[in-house]
Structures are given as C-alpha cells and as structure tokens.
Length: 141
Image 1: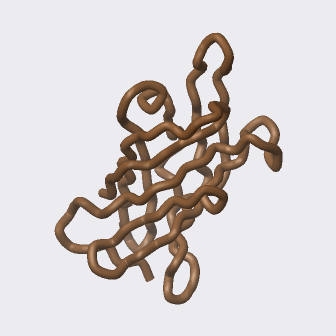
Image 2: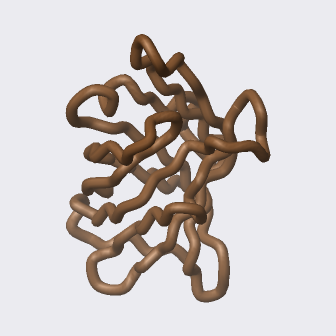
C-alpha cells in the first residue's frame, strides 16, 4: 500500500489537493493495482473504476510504473463544471531504493480525456506516494 498527498486537475482552473491510496497486489509474478482519493470535495467524488488495473514496471532497471486501462470519473461541480471522465494508461516514476515511492508528474502522468482522447483537458495528477505497508519494501524488476 502506498499513500500520500497529490494534486489533481481536470476542468477546474486550479489544482486540488487530495490524499491518494494506491494498493499494488502481486500474485504469481503478475501485478495489479487499485486506487482511491480522499479529502474534501471534489476528491471524495473522483473515482477510479475498472480496477484491478494491470500494473507493470518499465525499463531495465525499472524506472517507470505503468498502470494500464485506468478509468477516472469526475463529479459535476455546479453550475459551471459538468461531470467528466478520463480513460487510458497512467505512468509514474518508480523509486525502489530505501522505502519505495511512486512519483506522479504533471504531463508524464496525464490520463486522456475519455470523450476526446488527444485533446485537452486531460486528467492531471502530481505528487508522491510512499509505501506504508507491509514492512517489506516492494521490489519491481
């Protein structure tokens, strides 16, 4: 389990700070993950659907974490912002030394708009989550 504070943005002109919990499960050499946001509205209304998501390390040594097929649903914020969604692969920087961390970067960690991939605004996330359990550090190779 990885937890930390991240900032998210889609249609709003400002970043919103939310707590992120990312759980990675490994079984038989295959990794999957699920995610949830916490905090004040709209964080609690933003949902990751379709999990578990196929999760893989890229590079040798692994430097990038790929979370495939993520669907993100964003609640409406009346009156100006309708509900929205994003869908696609999510990439983050993997740091497995010491206590493992996963860093989401603006631009690198964007997930495409579901209704018009390749156009803005994408779902954006930035911030770092740190492994909080179990006590044995996760190794991705």
